Amino acid sequence: AQSVSQHNHHVILSEAASLELGCNYSYGGTVNLFWYVQYPGQHLQLLLKYFSGDPLVKGIKGFEAEFIKSKFSFNLRKPSVQWSDTAEYFCAVNARGATNKLIFGTGTLLAVQP
Amino acid sequence: SQTIHQWPATLVQPVGSPLSLECTVEGTSNPNLYWYRQAAGRGLQLLFYSVGIGQISSEVPQNLSASRPQDRQFILSSKKLLLSDSGFYLCAWSAKGNQPQHFGDGTRLSIL
Image 1 (cartoon, rainbow over the protein chains, first blue to last red):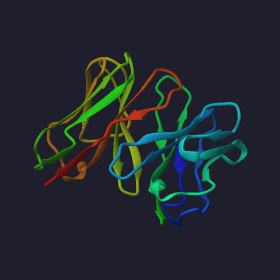
Image 2 (cartoon, helix red, strand yellow):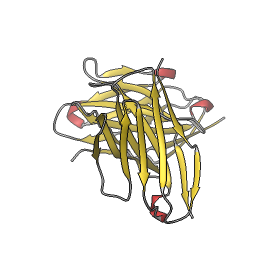
Image 3 (cartoon, one colour):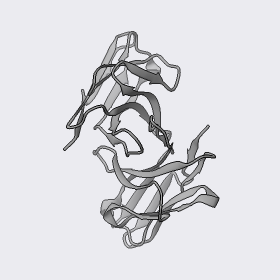
Image 4 (cartoon, each protein chain N blue to C red):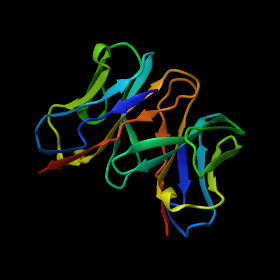
């Protein structure tokens, strides 16, 4: 069965620090990978996605993620975080197919201190 | 543009009462529809998905059911709520194929 692991449950950073959130998945076939973000009081929204091609994908607000197939990883990065990046971040994966079902990680709560 | 609406935003229900949460999508046709439950520290768990009217697949055995009476309407129901049904329920839609999912604002359900 597919699963997604996010090892950092709670991360606290100061503004301008660099960010890397880990995400590993288990699935033997071809997958699509996503990072979603949930800002306080807001709905879950797509941050970036990987379907194919360049394994380094860029998303909104300066975020990027790198798909490393050999490591089954899709880590999220940002060179310099801002206070407004405080949110919960979810990694998700789906096996390619008609149903498009997503398997989510447990989420990482990021708190950025000004 | 496409929008997704969920209601109510908050609901407090007694144990044993029925439940009906509604989700509608506008601006698209024949979407895939999904119901998730989000629990603190446990991420989002897929409960049901639907690829078309009347087509419902259940991902986990539970006290809830789902229905899709119209193309862009997805309903989450229960005949008798349990304490364990408390949580945050999210509806989502996606276009067919390998497309991202888009989420509603969610319903906070508290069972007393």
